[in-house]
Length: 186
Image (cartoon, rainbow, N blue to C red; front, side, top):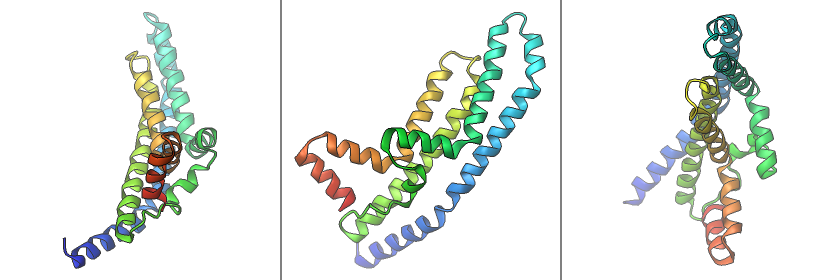
């Protein structure tokens, strides 16, 4: 690829990266609104689910409780992400999107790494929201709890992708770990 095309492509990625980062807070706001809606609908449908639940009262209660728990997680999504990030990586989740420590060695390569990790973090945020929303349907299918927990855990790992890369690089040993750290952190 010619140098002017590489430069133009990396400039485009850098512009997209600068413009996509403010969407993080808007997506979190939509998650909080969705959590509020799930709580309102769970509370509003509580008398109906309890009345219809004569055949299976446990399932109706679990659906209401699952909706309330998922909604509470979504309303408090920032503290929820911070708690999980502090527990596993000793870092606030708000610092992860900055990607200040990613250098990637060569300047063109670093923008590709930053862009890829930013997209991965956004996918992780969507997965976290989807997992919390899935908790309201836990009584419909017994496998939904596992899928919801998988989305929540995978979302937290994707949101903290830089910390996961650090943990992996220190876990695999000196030679391969130093290569991984050199690739991502300069």
